[in-house]
Amino acid sequence: MAIGTDDMVRVLGTDADERGAAGADLPSDTARELYRTQVLARTFDEKATSLHRQGRIGTYAPMRGQEAAQVGAAAALSETDYCFPTYRDHAMYLQRGTDLADVLCHLLGQGNYVDRDDTGERNSPSPPSTSSREEGDVRTFPPTIPIATQLPHAVGVGMAADYRGDDVAALASFGDGATSEGDFHEALNFAGVFDAPAVFFCQNNGYAISVPTERQTASATIAQKADAYGFEGVRVDGNDVVAVYEVVSAALERARSGEGPTLVEAVTYRRGPHTTTDDPSKYRDDDGDDVPPCAEKDPLDRTREYLEATHGWSEADETTLRESAERTVERAVQTAEGRPTPDVDEMFDHVYAERPERFDRQRERVAENPEVDR
Image 1 (tube, helix red, strand yellow):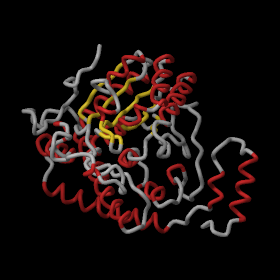
Image 2 (cartoon, rainbow, N blue to C red; image 1 turned 90 degrees about the vertical axis):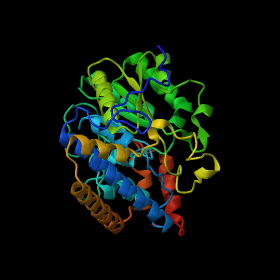
Image 3 (tube, rainbow, N blue to C red; image 1 turned 120 degrees about the horizontal axis):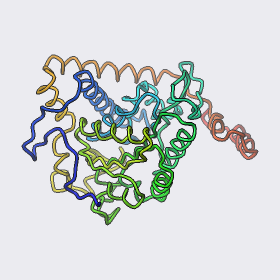
Image 4 (spheres, rainbow, N blue to C red; image 1 turned 180 degrees about the vertical axis):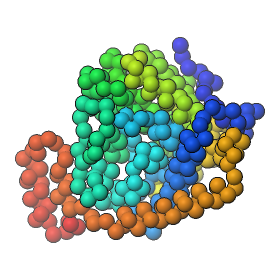
């Protein structure tokens, strides 16, 4: 049955409906943690944008407006589940426990510290041969820059885990633009045929850079694309962190229990540019009809109102949280900028299990090039 545009899961209210912020059945500790990570992510996002303007990091993809979607989905994962984020999913890394300095190292061009230990040595992603997480085990993968390439990876890992009888699932996060890529369709087809324990989490923020969703697909929704591959699709208010958390939790539980994959479409809105080199005013009107009703209110405001109405959140709590987030971000910047830059030779390592001969020739050419910043 096709999913209509009105079939959207929502828990927290918006300015466009009469539903209040109270009533969500979520433990206080969990609710507070979801808000804490959103605030930290927003604080980091503002700092990263500033660092780009100062020339201290390269091109940056802001996540403002999508914090609830990312935090809610990542919070639903168990420690042993696999997560395959995309390049805008900085909040996912924070929710998964990645040190903020490690996230910054990637933006500083120092390589992916996400898969390194405390000494800077690389960890290797563990094969999905165990449902327990061990030291040095990588369950959250580095950010994927090519569009949609992480989706087949997630399906493959999920299928391998299934073959080994592990009680884990794999979540792949991507944007609406990725649904126009062949990798999206191939991944969903494989997942449907083999009942892979995978969850496809689409953050539909309305635009693939400057291309609106209606130019990406003739389908009424992205969630209904799951029908073609024989599994369930769910549409959720992506600015409602509680709804995202509950929907993704249910999808992951179905995947782990052998009930197959799920496509989750989280309807949200990118409140800033696609990247720090983009000017969204050239192709959209943030004050017009481009903003979906569910995204008119900031996701952080919606979460805070829920905490105030249900879990006794106070102005003092807010002040303490904001000040802590500022200190955490500043410490992370100092730590990341103080780390040594990995040698350029490392670009040839950890790509193939057996390094091809052409890598040796390329390494020699790099060594002979005096202009390479080593």
